[in-house]
Amino acid sequence: MKKRILAAILSAAMVMGALAGCGSSSGETGKDTQAGTTADSSADTKAESDAAADKNEDGNNTASADSDKPAKKFKILSIWAEDTKEGKLLYNLTKQYQEEVNPGFEFEFELVSANDLTTKVATLVASNDLPDAFAYVAGQPLTELIGADKVVNISEQLEKLGVSDQIEEGAVTLLKGLSNTDSIYDLPLGLNIEGFWYNKKVFEDAGVEVPKTWDDLLKVCDTLKEKGVQPMSIGGSEKWPLSRLVNAYVIRTMGVDALTKATSGELSFTDPKFVEAAKQVSDMASKGYFGEGVTTVDQTTAGNMMLAGESGMCYNGSWFTEDITSENNPAGEDGIGYFSIPVVDESVSPATEVPMNCGNILALSKDKYDDATADWLKYFVEHAGDYAMKEMGSVKGYKYTVEGELSPINQVVVDTIDSVTNAATWFEAMMNNETKTAAQDNVQTLANGEMTPDEYMQSIQDAYDLSK
Image 1 (cartoon, one colour):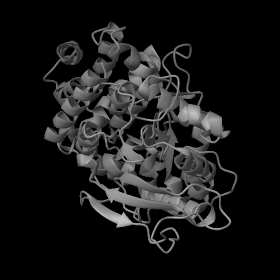
Image 2 (cartoon, rainbow, N blue to C red):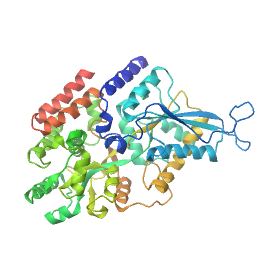
Image 3 (cartoon, rainbow, N blue to C red):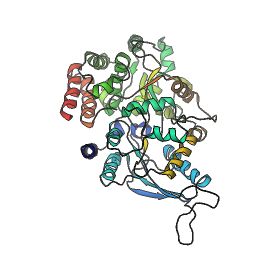
Image 4 (cartoon, rainbow, N blue to C red):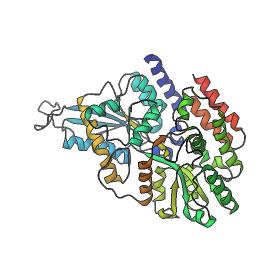
């Protein structure tokens, strides 16, 4: 069975390698990949720790005289350079652990580009040489490693270490949902909410209020269009923003677990409610809510249009707050607001169920896991929350006790995260590569009116059936 799973991992990596660049346009791995940028594009470069452990006369690693911690050479495969947000979190906390707790803990970073990550990991799996810790992709890619028994059950280990309460409940729910497991097998390195960001002045000038229901949303779109304002700007050229809107309606009419049921065969993608979700997006496009040439607009342009008041709103994740707080935002930070997906049926999905995104995650090799790694893990989860809040003014999925300087819009994000009762994933999170490709490629055809909602959902079901 494990051999079949390993073959699937290698096959998936080959597909993803052939689709180079998908990670930067799929919108499912946080700011660095969703916005089309990576922390470092130089593959397989290494950065040795400049704070190496003390060595004895023979050059062997030793713990300090006042430390009983086990010595270890700890290898980390990362897609983030040390001077990026995620890179700093991982590198600085590990270095801090070395300096404050275990001088015998040497660590080494190996950088790989985000686009090459799955291929690199597949190669390491095949050679049975996964590093101690490695960046990876949540959802189906990680699920395959779980099935191959290659990664540590993080929930079990945190329970043993007495720190199971250090990860935010919203992050735990999201990670469990992405892997469809009762435990988490990865550590979050970011925690984003998704939803609609709107220009307050545009709304005020048009006399519209933040919509509470989906019908309200459509009425707002109609009013804005009547006032001569493009209701929404969507980065349709990147595909994922369009499929996110399909997913938004799915969540509110079918529940947060609809995609999990569909990818497990419990539901069909041709279910009438899935088709209705596709129809909502098709109708919005045909009514001109997205403006002209939606599939030629990238997500950066879509966001800038909303900030400039050229559109009323856009769908995006909370990584977008970097643009909102920028001095280049013509509306100013106070001029932009946020609302989650408007409710369709409160009994199916209330407003407190929010689509969330954890970015790329960190997994630990089961074969390399030992007492030294366990001690590092305990330190990391105990300090990650405070470090992120104090040094970055952001939430990374860990509990924090310090007060950071949050901008007003980031405070909205934190408050929303705190209010979440259930986390929903993005549309393609649980799909295999064949199904994901159909969902993303054909959503442009759907938006252009060249494919009906029935045909769109049938194309996804066909891809899923053929891939089994």
